[in-house]
Amino acid sequence: MALTESAPAVPPAAHAPEGGRTATETGAHEGILRRQSLRESAARTYARSLPIVPVRARGLTIEGADGRRYLDCLSGAGSLALGHNHPVVLEAVRKVLDSGAPLHVLDLATPVKDAFTTELFATLPAGLADDARIQFCGPAGTDAVEAALKLVRTATGRSGLLSFTGAYHGMTAGALDASGGATDVRVTRLPYPQDYRCPFGVGGDRGAELAARWTENLLDDPKSGVPTPAGMILEPVQGEGGVIPAPDAWMRRMREITASRSIPLIADEVQTGVGRTGTFWAVEHSGVVPDVMVLSKAIGGSLPLAVIVYRRALDAWKPGAHAGTFRGNQLAMAAGAATLAYVRENKLADRAATLGARMLGRLQGLAADHPCVGDVRGRGLMIGVELVDPYAEDPGSPAPPADPALAVAVQRECLDRGLIVELGGRHSGVVRLLPPLTLTDEQAAAVLDRFADALAAAERAHRPGPPTRARSTHRRNATGPSH
Ligand code: PMP
Image 1 (cartoon, rainbow, N blue to C red):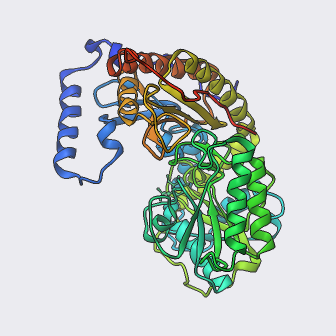
Image 2: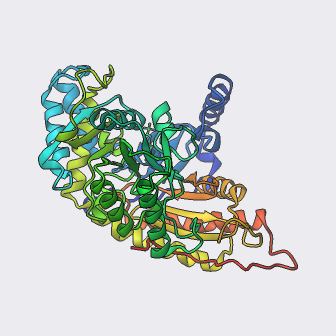
Image 3: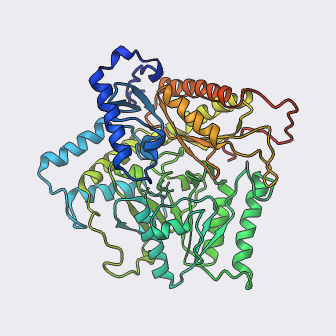
């Protein structure tokens, strides 16, 4: 494909000749990592599991200060739709820099912002685009979530919120409260449908229907203790929650349930947007048109940018209701507009759907040979492999218990082989792949080869074989998206 970068033959890091690295490079790499661990906070995350020092990057490939090269399937936690330093992104950024345009403008109008908004509106689901308003938020996804919550609370005059088990919406107070692990009394957490660990023990369409009925019942039962809320927030595919695609029929049920009760529906597309799941926005799979969309990550073309777009009727908040100094990042808007246009013009969402389905198929093949692979699922290029202990039982779940230690071991073995992957899931047992949408067939094959190799090595080291009196009464299946 002409639109994808050529696939550099990156040697597996562990096998890269040591001679390729000078002592100075290795020393700089180690010194930087040592100083990081001495000076940075205990709250740092990726830096712990990925002890690399990126110095150059292009497309799928990152080069470390030690000269090693890695295939990056973390993609800035899903923000690099076009991979690192894509030429159209660099060109857009350079154009702004060379033009003498101000880089900091608060929320003033600029030609760059105007072009970004036009491009974004051109991608929105019909039915929202015609009637939409946009609010530029502080630069992180979590700030846009806060804005969305404030917007619907102001517009409805209500305070409660519906969210879902396993959700992740960010780290600021309101977004964290809406996420799965929180306990805010204003937030009612509803069951998110999942096939593999279905809370009703049945999975499939039936499990999703039961989840929908639970929601409906809670809203209609005058003694449920759940007054009509200000909104419902959901991820069309839960990312951090373990790559769990919501069934399309369930999404439509959520739309009906909220619409018929005048509850604004907020789709958090921070991670699923810009082609990632095989449609430009993940809500398009189900045809659902939400009232509010929360967007960040890929819309900034690798630079920080976050917005909400919403129906005009909700625009009842007052000037300054959601402010923030850094709402006018011109470079991010230029990089974002270029990314949105490139994904649209080159039909990268379709490409993500096709390639993602093929990768899922190959991963499902792996599941047949590795009992520790409990489930393989995803949508487009948002893929998860849930690792389990197949010889243990979890009385509370229809599936065997997750194996977070094995997931960590697989991540480490991947890194040794020059592959960067992410971990996630409710029980931290899901290995996640979020490659750029520009991934070539050749690169996809290289990613899967390394992953397969890493999985086999981790499994061998971690659990040499079944216990002598092994018993596993669990269903062990490998499912793709059930849509
Ligand atoms: N919503 C979703 C669905 C996310 O995946 C994330 C980040 N992983 C956020 C919100 C928060 O975004 P940020 O980290 O930029 O605050």
